[in-house]
Image (cartoon, rainbow over all chains, first blue to last red; front, side):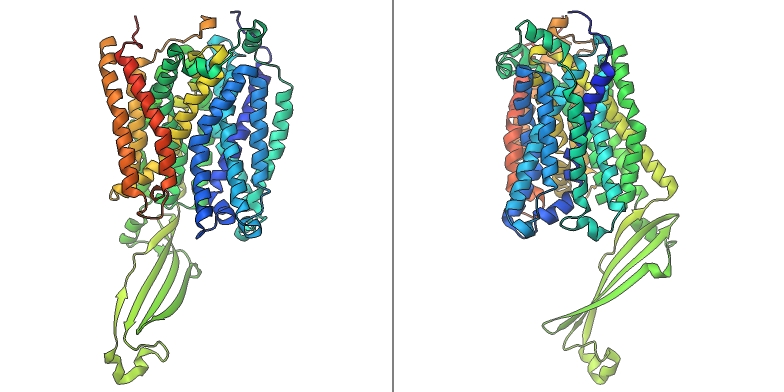
Length: 533
Length: 73
C-alpha cells in the first residue's frame, strides 16, 4: 500500500483529539460531581433511587462501555470512521447537556434518577465507540514510521479531559458559595451545560474532515467487512490477537492509568484527608507537567518499538506504587503531629465549640463538639472532637452539678474520649511540591503504558475490522480492569482492615500479570497490519 | 522461549477459574454485611457477569498458548 501523506495531519489530529477530549470531559464531570448528583437525584433512604445510583455508577462504566465498543466498532467498520465518531460525539454531548437539565428528585420524583441513569448509560455507550474511532482515524492518516507520535495526541485526551473537568469544576466552585453550587439549579450544572458549546465546535470541525484514506480506499475497492463482529471474534487468527492485546497490554495499562490518576486522587482525599482544593491542585500540576510525555513516549515508540515502553511503565507501577502511597500516608499523619505536642492553634478564632445535651432514660449525655485548626511545621489541619460525658442517674445540667449539694453522690458519670478525627489537611509548600512530584511520577508511568498503545492496537488488526477489534479490548482493559480499581481496593481494605495500602495489591497484581504475559508473547517489532505488510 | 510460552499457557488456564471462585466467594462474604457498594448485590452481579466471559477469554488464551499459537519462528 502506498505511503500515507502527512499533509493536513495537524487538522486531523486536532479534530479527532478535541472531540475525544470533550467526550472524556463529559464522562468525568459526572464522576467528579457524584456527591452533588447523588444528593439531587439519588436521595438517601430511597431504595429504588439507591439501586438506580449503583446502576449508574457500575453499569455505565463496566457493562455499557464494552457494549458501545461492539456497537460503534461494528458501525465504524461498516459505514466508515468519520460518521461513526461524529455520532458518538453527538450522543455524548447531548446526553451530558441533558443531565444538566434534569430537574431534581424533589421536583419530579423517581423520574429524575431514571432519566439520569438513562443518560449516563448513553454516555457510557458513546464513550465505548469514540476512542477506537479517533485512534483509528488518526492512525490511518499517519505514515507507519510516525504512527506512534501522531496517535499519541489522541492518548493525551483522556488525561487532558480529566484536567479540563477538574479545572472547570474548580473555577465554578470558587466563583460561588457552597450553597449556591449545590442548589437544585446551582453551579454544579454549569459544567454539564458548558459541554454543549464544546461539542458544537467539535462537531463543526469534524464535519469538515474527510474519511480516512485507508478506509476510503478499501471501500472504493469493495473490500470492507460484511460482518466485522464475526471476522473479529469468530476468526481464530484475529481473535487470538484480541486476547493478546487484552491480556498482554491493555489490562495492565488500564490499572496503571486508573491508579496513577483516579486512585491517587481518591487516596489523597479519603485516606490521607487532604484538603479538597489542595489535592486537586496537586493533580492539576502533575497532569500539566506529565502530559507532554505522552507525545514523547509515542515518538520514542516509533524509534525503538512499543512493547518495552508500555511494559516498563507497568513494571515501574508494580515496583513503586507501595513506596509512593506509603510516603503519602506518612507525610500526612496528623495523629503523629498531635503526639509530637508541638502543634499550635492557628488562631484563637479558629476554634469553635458547641455543647449539645440529650436525655435518654435516666441518663444525660453532654456532647462537647470542638473544631480546632492547628498548624504543625507549616502544615495545617482541622481537629474534630466529639467528647461525651454521660451522667447516669436522675441528673440535670441546670442547675449545675455543684448546686445539687448532697445528692451529687448519687450521680455517677463516665467520660468518653471519642477518638478525634483529623481532616482538611493542608500541606506546607515543600510537601505540596513533593506530593506533586510523586503524582507526576505515577502519571509518567501512565504516559509510558498509555502513550504508545493506540499505535500498538491499530497495528495488530487489519483495516477492515480495526475499529471493532481494537475497541473491545481497549474498553475491557480500561473500563473493566481499570474502572474496578476503587471497588476492589475497597473490597481488599474491608477484608484486610489493618493495612491501609492493601488496595494497591489489585493494580499491582494485574499489572504484574500483564507484564509477564506481554514480555513473553508480544513482539517488539512494528506489527504491520496485513495490507501494509 | 516457545516452550516457556506453552508451559505458561497452563497457568493462564488455571488463573481463570481461581479468579471466578474468588469473585463468587467475595460476593457471598460481603453482600448484605454493610452499606458500602461492596455490600450491595448489583455491583457483584454486574462484575461477575462481565468477568466470567473475560476469564473464559483468559482460558482460551492459555489454550492457544499451550497449542503453540503464539510461537515465533
